[in-house]
Length: 98
Image (cartoon, rainbow, N blue to C red; front, side):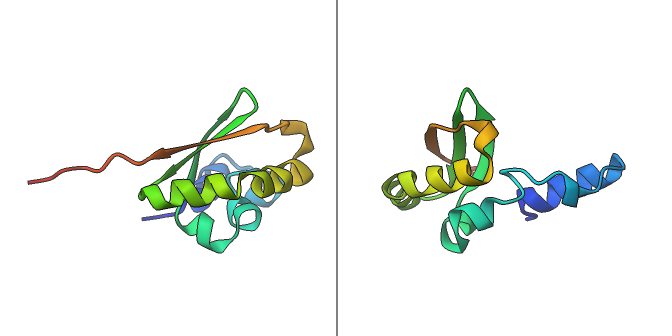
């Protein structure tokens, strides 16, 4: 499975926009959250001063919530124009295939 940052980079390149010039929270998630959290979560939405994340295990919800203040600080240092004030973490729905 490709990372969201890689998909976004490909999408921007297809539009003729160099991804390196379009740095955003999605493409910088590893830098912002750190390797462990970024490898176990995905930014799925950003709106109304809230960043929404998805993870596959409830334990990561707890870890992210514990580190929420640190993550918010890093987001707002790198992207002050976004004014992110909240992090919402949801559990990814599992496909029950029989």
